[in-house]
Length: 116
Image (cartoon, rainbow, N blue to C red; front, side, top):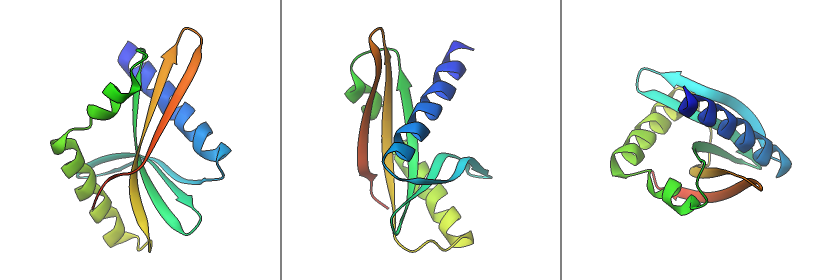
């Protein structure tokens, strides 16, 4: 249960972070038969598919490294499925890591972290 709460708080923090950068949120928790995409947003002319990783530890690079080959392949398949049904033009897959630390929230944004 705690993991679900951390994940939900992480997605909320990622959305707030993206909005603060001027991104427009299109979908949250987009689900299809292949799985789920945490956030779909627009950054200018590009559609951005975002995988969110949340942790209570200060080493955010470990959270980013938790997106291993199998998860990346799944993300690519999900994005391809979405793009077939909703033509979007330019797009990329980003990873946002959210760290909930005693002194506040830390955010690390990896743009174009997964290649399609």
